[in-house]
Length: 130
Image 1 (cartoon, rainbow, N blue to C red):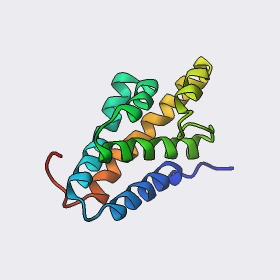
Image 2: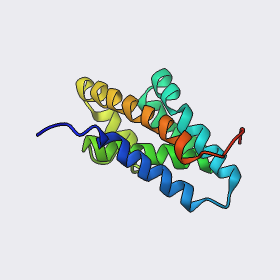
Image 3: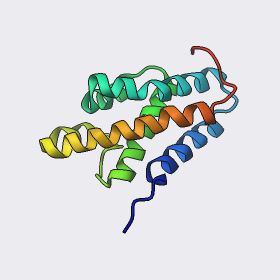
């Protein structure tokens, strides 16, 4: 079995495209989504996976929350670790052993880079801060 480099890019592209399509009439929300997708890597590399998952519940801006939820859905799909995307995600992350958590964080960073790349493509024409 060989590695397909599209494994991480495809679910991210699909997730962002669906969010963009779903909220195409709400420019403020689209700006929030784009900004969050671009900033995801920096947040994750600074604060870690556990805090990002907790942040999902605390975010008040719907556009930003949309992207964080999509990130965990993509991570769950690619990693095949169940219950990351749902409300049990924090418990799932907390209960992983150290090697599993660090491996998942590395994969999460790669997926976060994909979010940053695809945000500029999917949300082209959406400019400014939300």
